[in-house]
Image (cartoon, rainbow, N blue to C red; front, top):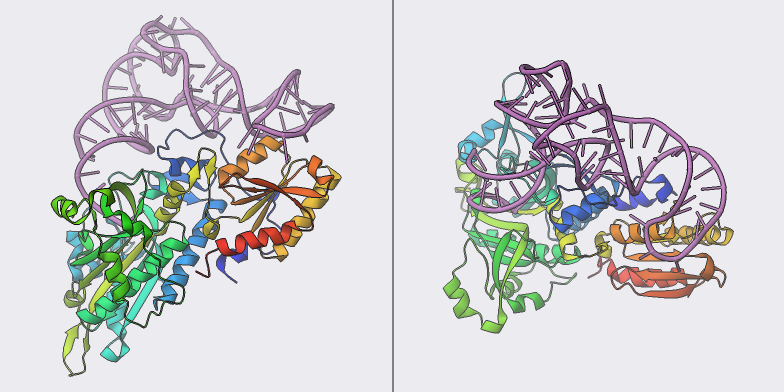
Length: 461
RNA sequence: CGGGGUAUAGCUCAGUCUGGUAGAGCACUGGUUUUGGGAACCAGGGGUCGCAUGUUCGAAUCCUGCUGCCCCGACCA
């Protein structure tokens, strides 16, 4: 059972028993569209600057995002674990980052005066775990990852969960004997990221990037093009057409051809761009200068942490060498608003099926009408049995309110059950994205829905 | 951290200039009528006006200090 199926088992996905306090008006603090829609759709509630509660609808989306990330990390050979949020300052002194990291690192002390930090990232801790038990090159390669809440005391958090102080992040850390095998590990994550963001409904372009406080000399930011993006980016238009590595990609094979193909065309963020090079390498009609949202970043940093922290192992010649590492992040709580920035219209969110909080919503336009109630109950039951993630709007609201609410929260398909059509044993199926509506008989609606949703789940691509 | 705004009901806001005991719409509760794009009517409930201090017979309104939140910039997944 996947994490979201847990939520859908049992007969309780009725709106009348759910917790979905959507807002008709936009709270004034929200500036960008994803922030506004996340507040209005009752996905999140702000608790303080840069700190948010994830309400049931938003949390369900977050779990689906997490599930896809885990599937693709596991497929690429990474192994999941979980490290604590609070870390001893000692580890950070070892790497030299206790002083190097600025005020974004939240420092606190416990009752005995021991200094702690609320982890802004986990390179030190994973290196500590690694050095405690791995001593031989025979145990490599190794890639460990976790999905955990992190805290960075940003000077100015903004844009809702797009840049919050507390955020959920996937961090993978690779360990290899030398640079050559480390690059192979880097490539596995690179390919996993292409697949991950594609399945999340936000195909991302890898771009050359700065390494920042993580350090190292090889790094890519995975960028989703969006008008509201924080970074300015330069790239070749053909990157938008590149094929995504398929489900049967062999992660034990050499992935360099795929990575080379994706990195052969110009793509760089503003921080590192050489504009003359951009002009020279990219034909005018293929030049894209746009804004983008950074949803993930990959780093190769060699022995930056292993050396000062003594993470060494024995190679085949019996020599003790520092391990080569990389780290690979995806900000889950940033991915969610990024998906919305890329998938919305004036009425609200339009979720890709793969991450939609519900795949389908049934709108009973006239609660209390015998025929409507009966049809809705039957459809609801059958969709649950067909393993469709369904929400039934059985609230006492007017038809208009139900339409508006369903559009706002962005459920991909709506089955509209009204007194007129039900007299002919028909219901209406509406596609949220295209706004197309079509009538179907009660006997054919279930199969129709299954045939539409199944491929859109993108779990077999 | 520099600059700029803002704080009145759950939400969006009026009232502040010109001091006189708190308002609207939406939401909520009870009732009646409605039912295909955020319904109508009737009757209700709900606010120490961000906090503190001062001026005044009297402060949401004027003075001073503080805090939260938002926006622009520098920094970041």
